[in-house]
Image 1 (cartoon, rainbow, N blue to C red):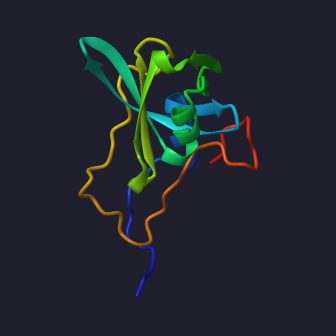
Image 2: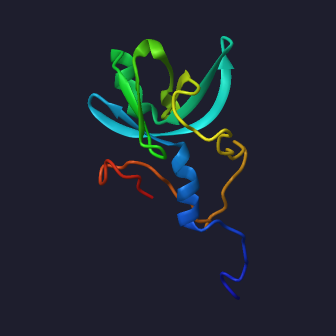
Image 3: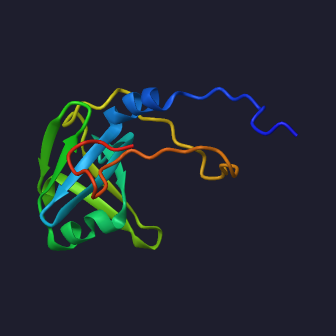
Length: 144
């Protein structure tokens, strides 16, 4: 048996990080921070908006207390301060997911969002995956 003989075309990790960083946000909150990713652009009430996905536990307190949040776009090092009336947060706590919607054009995201995997797709065991974000070990630099 020749383990690892199967060849796959993959993007090297450093190139994947260079591409993904333009979609990554550090979400600064009064009591901490978390990671968010731009996942879509759409129209809400005839207004162009950006949708950012994050974990519900990251923004739940800011949502409930109507706190200001600051989105730090890592690719451009640009900050966007959002008061409660400048954003819409939708929580899905049973899945620990939240969506943040705000006016498109406020941050310099690439024109097309990253493609998302189908909700029905399954990553087989043994496939390498990566994660970019802002864990507690390094709060100002994007970690992989």
